[in-house]
Length: 257
Image 1 (spheres, rainbow, N blue to C red):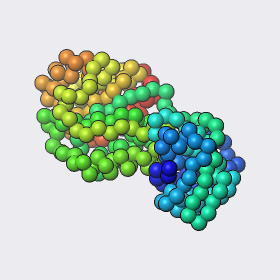
Image 2: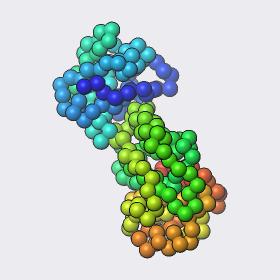
Image 3: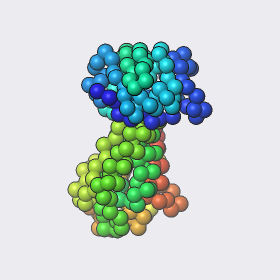
Image 4: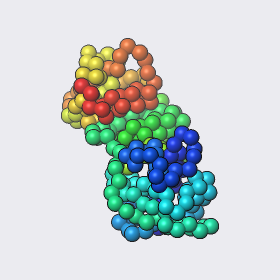
């Protein structure tokens, strides 16, 4: 089974990464390849097609070089290049590898934004360690999100995962009405009129709810509170929806309080 695309840049210099290059505990010093979960349970993995061209032509890997395999569900294993031909390569799967995932799990629920901004949000949130992203439509949401945009977001997430060295590919759900989002105790809704600063509740946040640039309506704020969510603000500056989402996620994943 051929693993999925491995179009990641393993280090900023763009140089070939050898098996003895630096510390294996640093994700930027190895090449990461997103594979199927069943591949990690095998003794060897075959690489063909676009993955082969990228790893063995563009990245110029050779026999003996290391590749970290991830399954997109939190598992990672080391592998070593065992064989390389013009169209096919074989990786020998070895022991468990670091997962490079944050200790906390935080979900994002975000009002639909413009397609290119949504892709930017997905890229940065995946790099940070997001596991779940749900889009919603509220009273003041002014954008739609077609299926082709969701497909692009999933491709962006795969690339971001391989680039960053994470091991968990976030689930990205199609937009639903705000009332259908699974919001409850542990959820924090960003609201500029809130009395509480986000930093004060970030350490206990299990989900962050980010409204449209026009904000939530008063009725929606009341409904969110009735469902167990607390409201908090990020500060005096006005942020775009996608900026607020990424900023809040970064703080919440650190468990800061």
